[in-house]
Image 1 (cartoon, rainbow, N blue to C red):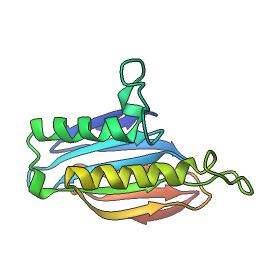
Image 2 (cartoon, rainbow, N blue to C red):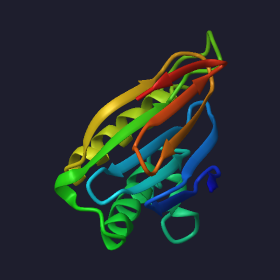
Image 3 (cartoon, one colour):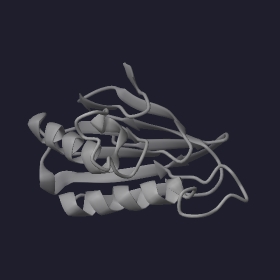
Image 4 (cartoon, rainbow, N blue to C red):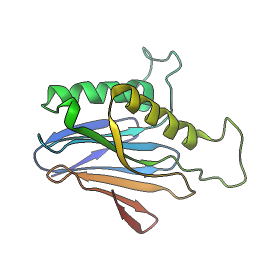
Amino acid sequence: MEHLVGLGEYAIVKELGIIKTLGLGSCVGVALYDSINRVAGLSHIFLASANGREKHENPGKYADLALPLLYKQMLQQGAHPRTLYAKIAGGGQLFSGMEGPLLNVGEQNVLAVQTKLKELGVKVSGQDVGGNKGRSMSIDVATGLVIVNKAGEITTL
C-alpha cells in the first residue's frame, strides 16, 4: 500500500508499504527508518523554523517542530533511538539567478533539518540535496530503500 505525504505532512508506517512525497523543490523530505523494528516515517518540510507560529500553523511544515514530533511518534510505534537513521532529499534552488538570505530557502531548510536531526541524535546516512531540480522521494518500509526521482534521474539512498 502506498501512503502519500503532502506538503507539511508526515506519515509513519510499520512492516510493509511505501511512503512517498512529491514536489520537493526548496522543501526537504526526511525519511527516518529503523531497520530492526521496520518502522519508517517520512516528513515533507516546507520551512526551517516556525518562528513563534507553533499555536497557529501546522507544525508539520517546519523542521524545528515536525522532526521532534515524527521522532517521538516513531518511538511510540516501536522504533528504537539507537537503530534509527535518516535520509534526506530536496532543498533545491529552483530559481536561478536569485540569491540572498531570503531566497536561499532550500539551503536553510537543509541546514535546519541536519541540525535538528543531530540534536535528536539521528544520523543522516544518505542525502540528495541542493541543485536546481525538483524531486520526489519514497521509502520502502520493508527494506528501508529510499528512491529519489530528480527530473527522471533515479537515485537510491
